[in-house]
Image (cartoon, rainbow, N blue to C red):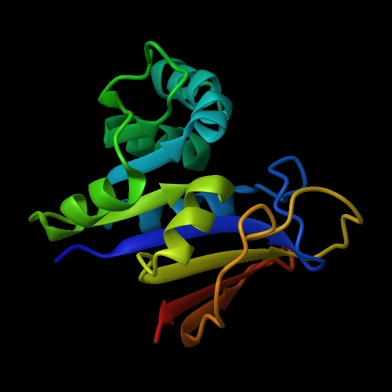
Length: 184
């Protein structure tokens, strides 16, 4: 059975706004290593629309640093699913839209052979956490207080306490700390 892994950048005060991050080469190398352990990335519409224009262009043009270009090539090469009821088409290669029940579809995908599944986006992760379908949590804690912005699992509360077991951590030169937890 495949694991479902959720990774997100989060500030010390719990903000998950993608604009509130230190995204240096060291962090991109770490993120690329995480993606090498998956063969499917699942997005919600909003996250897909944030990622697709930038990362597909960098993958094509190789216009950034070596580490950023490698991240772009890696995510571009992976199979991607966007859960959306409003999108009519997707542009990013290896991407398809699913309109089916998120819980049922992720359950089916977990039971298939393959590498792990990466979840991108707060809404999708909140829903899957409610259904106890996330196995691994990768929190990249940014060393500042944002003071505002979307919070982890704010839009859809988790029905009961979520117990996690620390698997590992890594501190970056920038002060960013990556923390890996598994669901107990």
